[in-house]
Image 1 (cartoon, rainbow, N blue to C red):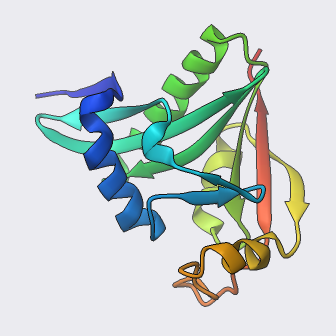
Image 2 (cartoon, one colour; image 1 turned 90 degrees about the vertical axis):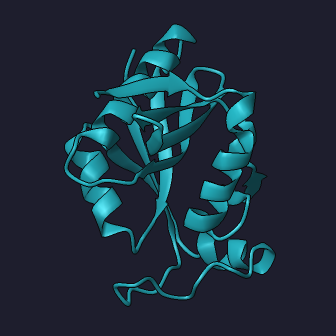
Length: 160
C-alpha cells in the first residue's frame, strides 16, 4: 500500500503527544523562550498502512509559518521532503510569505537537510538553549555526536 499524507485531527492527540515525549523529552518544546505543546498544534502525518512514519507540527503567526517539530521515522524514503511540501502548501493557503524553524547548533543533519531544501540561516541565538534548559531540565548538555547543545539557529525559506 502507498503512503498517505493526512492532516492531524483530535483523534491523533494522544499518539502525537507520546511521540513528542519520546522524541523531544517531554510533551512540550521551548522555542524562542516560549513553551509550545506540539500535540495541540495543526500538522500532518504520513501513514504507511496503519503505521505513522512521519509527523510535522506547525504554527502560523501573521504571514509566517513555523515548523515546530518534524520527525521522519524511516530515512531515505522522502518522508521529510513530503512533510515540508505539505507544510509549505498549508502556509501558502494561509497567505504566509515564509516558513521558518528553529534547530540547535548540534543538529548537523537537520541543518544540512533544511538548507538543501531552500532554507537559509537567518539568526543565531547564542546561549538560547542554556536559557531553555533552566525551564526544561531534560534538555541534554551534549548531543549524541558530543557537540555541546547551546544555541538556537533559525532557518527561513521564502515561499510566497
